[in-house]
Image (cartoon, rainbow, N blue to C red; front, side):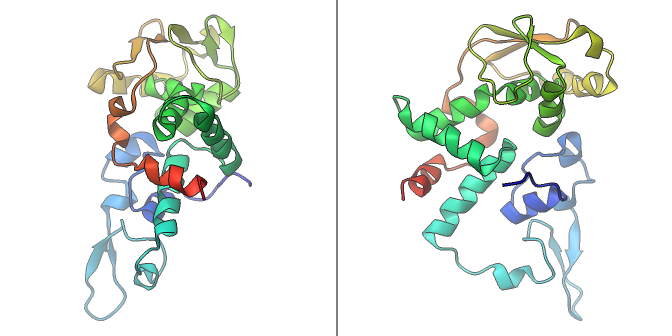
Length: 224
């Protein structure tokens, strides 16, 4: 399946959740989800753009089946991490083979992806931007250039920006987020040297910004 290239804010409205696909714009007043739409009709009432996209979202707002609910949970998680269906399925199969709880294993694998770690270390404002940095060879892992976004980072791995990319404005601007909120407990960042370390594999409960994702529904969907 080809990668989606349309407006990403439409994906947030389709899932009725901010997927944080555009960095700081998602936190600002410019985010379309924060804006109001006029509802067609003489009343001129307004609704938040969390409603599904389209001229008549009420027509699609009926009660969802169990399958529909499970599918939406899978789509949300897949879109948050910016993955295609085949990639996501392969990660799920790997999580299924690992000992422990499959849903938790899936989250751990997704968090270990290099593009995600680059994003979490504040080298990029979004996972899509982080993926571009990796693909273009701007990221080193333990001193070696790695250009595979799905590369799985291991505990104590060092992730650094290559010397030639340290003057990029997009990286400098992204690092401002570190000044505001720091990094997650399983990561360590030296913003001056533009390098960080993956300290430990996180637990599911540590991924606090995604606690509303019901991974058990995703497991049930793939079990059918």
